[in-house]
Length: 392
Image 1 (cartoon, rainbow, N blue to C red):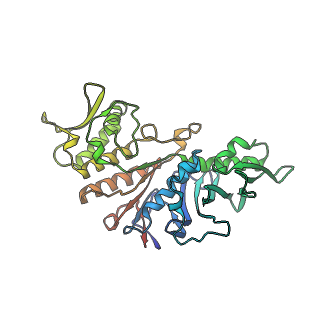
Image 2: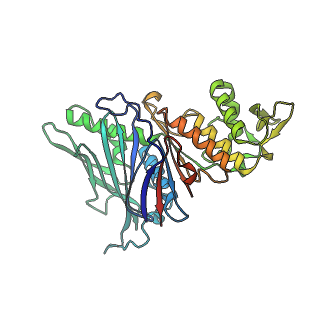
Image 3: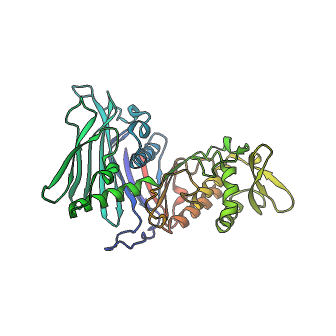
């Protein structure tokens, strides 16, 4: 696999406020796949709007899966939830050691008020799924390091920076959870060293947690759905239910959605709405403005994906099915949308309109997007878009 990163146009600088030019919203700015599926020694810088481009089999979807897995771990999920098929994450030609162990290594960098913080994780996939090593560093200082000392125990030995009467604190941590996500519960914050560890760990967790993996499924968006929580699922199956909420709660954002749909769908569009049906279900409609309302089941595959992705870009964590850090104000969080097949099914007009909308929203600093496309030649010249070209 070869990689080249080509910015179509320099992205707007992130909002700063943490001092020394640091962004005030923690965000993931680099993804590292040291040994993961088809990737080896790969590192990808992530801008506010990044498109992975390349032919089938080059690793675009794998990169997004690795990012999503790190996000799940950052939110406190177990390894089995983050990696439901761990064997598929092991590089194909990786040979087992004398104990029949094989695994993979991934990591990321999060920038924010605490500076640049790096997280690297080594995972054993066979014969048992477990974290065998983790390192959290900042400014060249190792803040947390874990290692599997005794394979017979379901724990790793952890050591974190203290800089007090003892330079480090040592304790066992479970081998099926990310140690960085557990630190805020284990570190007292009494010394400067401990406070530095807490700041770095919290920054990494906040940067990772607000992630929404999105791949709309038009086949499930055409039918009426039960009225529910009003939180959009990753497949956008319940889009009609979410429309009924957003139309009432935020008129300005809804007007922006209508404008986006008008630009990307065939025929006139005066409104996008949800109509309640007997039995508690709702269905999505386009109001054509002349007394005609078009049921979403009449829309094409590309139109439905376009509408769903536009809605995702114009909403936020309160509407999307994500797990934001509840203890951190929303103004200090950044939502990252992972969009596999970002251009799938879209015609040239739709993908251009959607990319411009994404660039505009990402330029405001509260949302980032990492997408996968088969060919990014159509994105050339769009302000604020960075393209990472992958080849098998």
